[in-house]
Image (cartoon, rainbow, N blue to C red; front, side):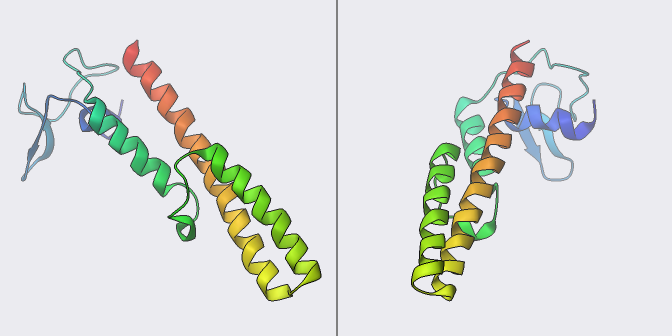
Length: 131
């Protein structure tokens, strides 16, 4: 297991501490994590784990959709609705307005798909830490 993978555990552990010279360390050993598959001292900080997940969900997809929902299903539904609306606007009213709405719809669909990936990775993460 790489250090980066170990630090993913430490980021959401109640036993973490930040050393300004070394970075994230274990408050029990005052060292970088050394475990292989699972840390025997790992205690998940639920609030921090939720915060990290929300940050990952918010960052998924296109930057132009930062104010979108944190729920992938909502983003996909809104994205499809905007895509259909955009196609109607594109063909009926105006090419420029339709392109803007279609682009937003596609961005929301992409965000929803990316958020699904984040949720799947989080589910695997939770399964890994509960083993």
